[in-house]
Structures are given as C-alpha cells and as structure tokens.
Length: 278
Image 1 (tube, helix red, strand yellow):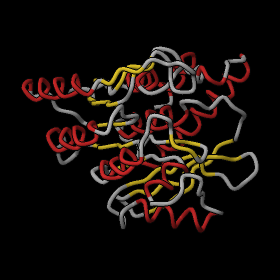
Image 2: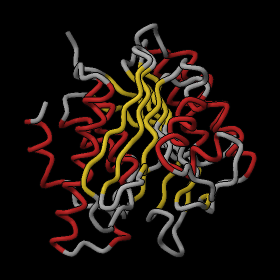
Image 3: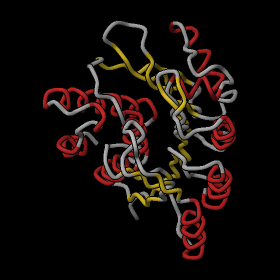
C-alpha cells in the first residue's frame, strides 16, 4: 500500500508562510506525499508591497501532460491560490483527467478575506473559481469567499447560527458536496468552522478558542490539516477539529514568540505534535 498522494495546485511564495510552504510540510508530516503544481511564484505573499509575480500557467500544462504520460495517480487533488484566469480551465481538465471514484477533490476557493477580494483576482477569476468549485467534493471557503460563491457582496456575512446553516446548505449544492466554512464566530472568544458532510448529511459547528493575530495563512493551514486527516481515515468533523485546534495552537505560539503578522504563523515547531495526534 502506497502512502496517499496529493496533487497540490497552489502558489509558491518565497517569503511569508502560506500556500505550498504550508501545504507541503503539513501533508508530509501527516503521512501523505505532496506533489506540487505551482500556480505562480511570488517573492513574498501579497500582503507585502512590491512582490514579484511569475505566472506558471505554461509549466502547469507541461507538468500535467507529463504526469499523465507517467500514469501518476492521486488520492487527492487540492487547489488554492490561482495565478491567472486560464488556470481555471486547466485545473478543470486536470480534475477530470486525474480523479477516480475515491479521489478527494478539495477546492479552497482562495479569492479574498476580511470582506475584500485579493488584488490579483478579477471578477472573471472569481466567477471561474465558482465553476471550478463545482467539481469539488469538498470546499473550504472563508466567509468572504463563501459570499462570493453565493453571488453576494464580498463584505456580506451570516448573522448567527441559523443564517450560517443556510449559507452552508446553499454552498453544499443541495447536499452534493461537503463544506467547511471557516472563520465562523458568533460567540465571544470562539471561532471555527461550520461543516457539512455530504456522506452523512450532517452539519456541525467546530469551534476552538479565539486568540489574537497573526492569522495570515490560517486558511491554508486549516485546509491542509483537514485534508491530511481525511487521508488518514478521519471523518470530516474529526478532521476539522484537528485542523481548528492546530491553527489555534499555532497562532498562540506565534503570538508568544512575537512573529510579525505578515510573516505568517510559526508552525514548524508544532509539526511533530501534530503527527502524534493521528
């Protein structure tokens, strides 16, 4: 039996922990092989001014073609930050070519946060991301991204438990795909995810203690731990709890040692403890 293999289509930022520099070590320590399919190379992530940006669309096409020639198979396909509108169609084809009946297709519809879209995302890219997400059997949007997927203003947010349940139901496409809606909070000092499991039809809220920033890269961290746990046989709710707790612990540790918010969370010293929780 081979270890689970993940095709990870994310950007690679040279400085600032996010995307592939988060996904690769987390998936690896959790027992999966992460095969990166870089969507872009950035000298530093987009919170930094003056970052360089290299669109990797052409190399993605070549890599996908080569993997197909090699007969490479994947237990999961995991997409995040995209570098261009053209990559949406490319990833749609990639999913159709490489998914099998049991493949987990996780689309983290990275488009924005805190009520705003990211500066590299156009309205056409946001519309395309919604179409890409239709091929997923699991999506992990934050509140801003969920609003965009639902055709609402990025600044929209659900008010309370009942409206959050409604958002999750709509995001599930009538129960056909699982959802982990992150950044959910209506209680003081509590934050987490609203999760719908398409296999069971159940919805649960997974909360952990809210600690202060830094939080850059938290979504990438949550989705990566979530996927790693699913590939180790955890159900969606167990995986979401593990992910929420790891993000909490990492934010707390980063605060204690004074990591600047824009550098992302200092998760590396906590990886060994994460592996033992499996």
